[in-house]
Amino acid sequence: MSILSEFKEFALRGNVIDLAVGVVIGGAFGKIVTSLVNDLIMPAVSYVIGSSDFKSLSMLLRPAVIGADGKETAPAVLLNYGAFIQTIVDFTIIAFVIFIAIKAINRVRRQEQAAPPAPAEPSDEVKLLTEIRDALHGKGN
Image (cartoon, rainbow, N blue to C red; front, top):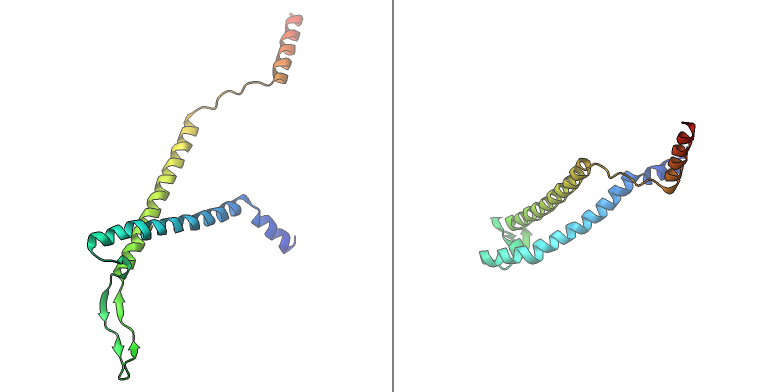
């Protein structure tokens, strides 16, 4: 078996395709959550705490070093806790939505397992064969 045919078999498996679809949808969902946090939640939080930009909240650990010529020789060292808090909010929203989705999927699976399958209506052929069988049994008696 050639490498190309092995790769084709691997790539066309259902699991790989499902994973690829999941990655694409996950990336799009991540952008939606990032927009939700950046454009709706964080401006409201910034308004409450009195800061115009939540991402810029930081603590100065070491100021920038300015040389004799007036140029910055070493940048300031900042503890960017605003960006960290925003990342935590992103994660929390994504985790909550995934939790809700999995809970809904599990509920549907439990309902499918608990409910017995409805009896299928026999086809016309099966009905005809049953009538023939019953008629033959009736003649034999």
